[in-house]
Image 1 (cartoon, rainbow, N blue to C red):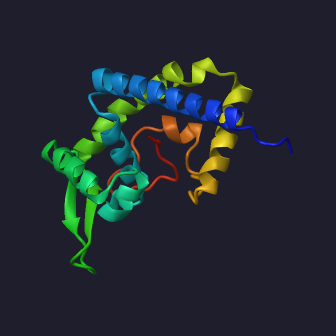
Image 2 (image 1 turned 90 degrees about the vertical axis):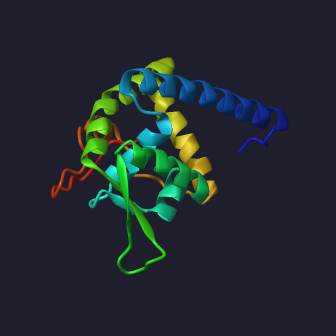
Length: 178
């Protein structure tokens, strides 16, 4: 394997950070203007909808969406006020609280999913060849695994385009990813 070069590492890092910032801003702008949801709200709804029960412990959800517990609490306050999620106490552990996606949250996610998928294409995927997309995904998974972050096998193209995730009483095998 070729010896690492500090300049190469820095160049790759800067390219990643700049591409991430630009693509995220573009996706966020499209989601807000066309889907009516901030990107962080979309991510929370996706994470909740991917579970069979449509619910996650707040602490687990905070880790999944890369927010502090207090950051997620503030976000959940706003989402609950908008009727997209509810919070409920854990019966087994009174200290635990669950975030639960509501019917209104599912409907909002259903409306936003096509916007999200189109925004990913517009602000990210269309700039790369299919083989480059595979290479980027493989390379970034290596970096994530190196940080102790497991692969998210449920994240695939079919899951992205599948409407409404977990309907009341009906579990699906896969769900959209944010």
